[in-house]
Amino acid sequence: MRFRLFGTDIVAGFDALFLMGIFAWWGMGVITSMVGVGVFALLAFLSLLTHEFMHVFTGRMFKIPCRQIRVMFLGMGAHLEHMGKKPFQAFLIGFSGPLASFALVGLILLSDHFFDIPGIAIPVLQLLLYFNFIVGVFNILPLFPLDGGRVFHSIAWAVTKDRHKGLVAAVSVSHAFIVFGLGYLVFAGVNMFSLIWFSIIAFFLWQAGTAELINSHKEDQ
Image (cartoon, rainbow, N blue to C red; front, side):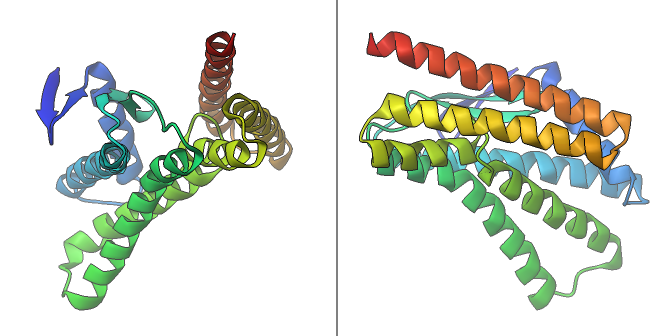
């Protein structure tokens, strides 16, 4: 399925149903009403879409077009033509996504403060606040090619004055962070389901970071 929103193509297949199912599963652990679970799943989906559109809008500030936003079974990704030709552009584009998630956290807190929220909506908003906070924190970690990894890349790029050297540093730190994180989870004794879930995410991040590093090396030759 493909549709257009704010001048950008949104591409979503069965991955979108899987993603909505994950959100609903999370919701059922906290929200007793099935209507509330459905509302949470929809709002969580829209929250991620807001996160990605912030990348798109920031890219447009530097005249960088976005080919599409693709919905995947582990999340979403805005496919910009490039992530900036200067370090400060890459920094702003990368940081804008987590900033959007934290802004949504702030809006939820403000709505709770200024409006009389119906009791049935409270658990939905509480879980949505937690969801956006986790998305913001996770995306600011130095995991490449997530937002935090790209922010780290922009900083390393500015320090080394070399885009590729900055990328090497960012991917290396990301790989080290992945190894440390998985090791911590093993020694912490998390349940097998969580360990498998995080291992899948780690695998995709490792592969994606390595692939971008290889492509960058080819481009520089």
